[in-house]
Length: 545
Image (tube, rainbow, N blue to C red; front, side):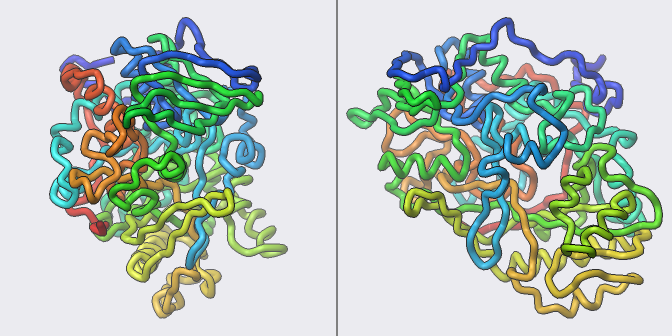
C-alpha cells in the first residue's frame, strides 16, 4: 500500500488497526520432525538453520530468487489457536527453558529466548528501529565494515519494513501507562515518541510477548516463513542441527536429529546458520569452525534492562493498550533508552518487588500502577560456553554500566514524580520505595551490580563480523571464515551493542546477505516510508572492541 506521493503510510491509525492484507500461502510446507523416525535425505540448494529474524528472511529471499530451500527449526510451529492469553501458560510453551535462561556473573540476568517457528520474534514486543547511523559509522571505523552505511542499507530496511508492515502506534492504542509516562516526559521537556511496530490489526491486547491472540503482531512466522513456503521452501520443525558435513573445506550437508528419534540429512551447497547469539557460536564450535580469530563465543552484549514502577491515585490498568508503545530517547547518547514495559496482572505478579503480604497488597492496587523500562547500551561483554553438556552464559556487569543504570533509574524516578506519582519503586536492593519526590536514598547509594534486578532481551556479537581476518568470525558479507558455503545470519554476527531493539538490524542484514548470495542488486524499488523512528543517538555509547 502506497500513498499518492509513492510513500508507504506509517502514521495512519486506521492502517494500524487494519487486519487485512496479511499473506496467506497456498500451501503450508511444514514437516513435523516428530513424524520422522527413520533416516531421511533431502537435496536443496540452501539449508537455513533457524527460522527467526536472521533465518526466515534469508530463506524467503533465496526461495523467491529461484533456489530450493530447507529450513530447520528445533522448536514447534505455533498458531493463534495455541495462544491462551495467559502469560503463566505461554512462558513454558513459547520460551526456551520456560523463560528461565539466565546469565551467571556478578548479577544474574534473565535472558528470555524464543524456541519456535519465528524464533524470538514470536515473543518480542514488535518494536522496530533501524540501526542508528552513528553505530553504522562506528562499524566502518572500528571493524572495517564497508558497504553498511545508512544509505547502503536503506533499500534492505525499506523492504523489511514493508514486509513486516512497520507502522507507528497511534496515541489512542498506546494505553494509559504510556500516556502517564509521556505526561512526565513532556513536563520535563524530554524527547520521545510513540514506537513503530510490525503489526496488522492491533487491538491493544497487552500480551505481545506471550503470543499475540489476534495474530496482529507480524512476527516472521507470519510473514517471511509463509512467503518462503509460497516460493517452494519447506520448514522442518522438531529438527535440531547436529553436524555440518564439511569436505574439502566446503559444506556438503547439514545433519539433524528429529524429535521422532530419526535423522535428517539436508544435502546443500549453502548453509546459513541462524540459531541466535547464544546457540550459533556453540554450534560452530562443536564443528571446529570459526575458531581462527579466537573471537567465537566472545564479545557478548545483551542490552541489559530493568524497570521502575510507580503508584498513582488515578486508574491506569497496564493490561489495556500496547505494552511497549512509547520510547524516550532524551539520554540515548548516554546509553540510556526508556521504553514501555507494561503487562497484565500475571506479568506484573512475576515482576513486582517484595513477597508475601506486601506483594499481595501491591497486586491489589494493580490498576493504579505504572511501569516503564530502562535499557542500557552496554560496554560490558560476556561469553558463552558449554560445560558438562550445559550452556553457560557468563556476563559481568561492569561498574560503568552499573553507574549508567543508576543514572537511568534516577531519571525515570524523576519523570514519575513529574507525572504525579505518589510512591515510586526503584529496582534496587536497599531502596524499597520512595515518597514525596525524594530521590536521596537512591542518589546516596553506592550502587553495585548485585543491587540491581535485571533482564536482557537482545544478545549480540558472539560470532561478530569484522573485515580483519584475525578479529572477526565472519567477514562483512557474513561468510564464515575458513568454511566455503557457510554463512551466519543472526544477532551473533552483529558486531556491537546498538542502543536500540535489534530485530530490524538483523532482518536487514539477512536480506542483504540473501541478495548477495543471489548476485542481485539492492531492491531499490521499495517505497520510502512516510516516517520512521529516529532516536536521538548522535554517537554510539558502547565502543568496546
